Image (cartoon, protein in one colour):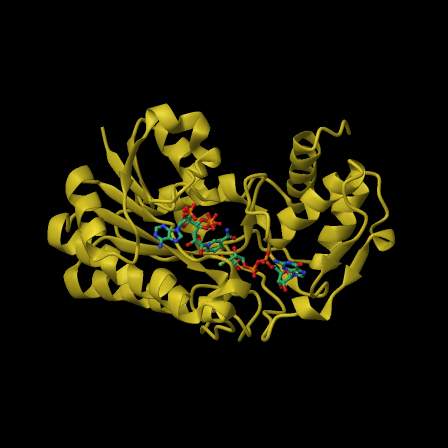
Length: 321
Ligand code: NAP
Ligand code: G4F
């Protein structure tokens, strides 16, 4: 039986990956940080089938212990300060947790489990002010936020440990992926939750930022399959994981409101305070390397994804569609 160590298991991706690995017969160990109130909602349904170890990406000794105690065959490094706007407010913390901490994880592995396979959660935010469209593995990075800059560090330190020490260390450059478990502050969940609250009579206005930004949105469950495949390769390689299609935030808003029988123009207003200091205007990934080498293609398309999220939020708010 293989053992996997997942950092960020309480987050969106960590919870889907835990499910996927359990279904494949892995022993799953999740690293969680100490909080005054436990936030295990996303893993509640698998809580009895996984082991949890306490650790924090800012603390080397806790990462060393997590590795020594679990002796993983595979490590999925999902933990990060992952919300882009927060990275302007907390640039040093984001640099530490999202960037530098990747070296801490790699050092823990190099010292105690050098033959384990390592996955780094790289991001399409690294492309930022894009140098070409669609973005592929060879597209130069031009990050536009402290978060994007930190992810570039995490990406290249992973390449560096692969090249310096021959470790099986790879990165997925994942474009935005969403689900009913997406954090409430990200734009998709913010919109689908608001739609449900409007239908439930709990909200009458929705303030938004830049409606013209374009993103390549996919389903988190599909993207976990791609990550697992990347970790089973004959040699470690980096892959763009995306749908290849892009939509504006306005299109997302329109579809989500329409799915609940609402006209978005009656409820949505833009708030200049929500415009970012520097925006990533357009993301569209080219997943052809993942398709050719991993045999991976996304199953859920954008319209189904939005409907799935609206349905889940309507249910959460007790609204019958
Ligand atoms: P998420 O829901 O925000 O989850 C982040 C996880 O990191 C949570 O479990 C959080 O724990 C943990 N964490 C934060 N700071 C930590 C620290 N100092 N020590 C230990 N754990 C810490 O993020 P996600 O959407 O699942 O994304 C997973 C990873 O993929 C992230 O690295 C993200 O940057 C990257 N990524 C995401 C996307 C996307 O579209 N979702 C795209 C590209 C890359 P708590 O629950 O305790 O807060
Ligand atoms: O949903 P978002 O906050 O995601 P963003 O910034 O693209 O980052 C996400 O995807 C990255 C991959 O590309 C991940 F690495 C990262 O961890 C995270 O998961 O915003 C999407 C777009 C932006 O252009 C933003 O300006 O939506 C625009 N937007 C417009 N109004 C808004 C809002 N975003 C948020 N969060 N809230 C708004 O009211």
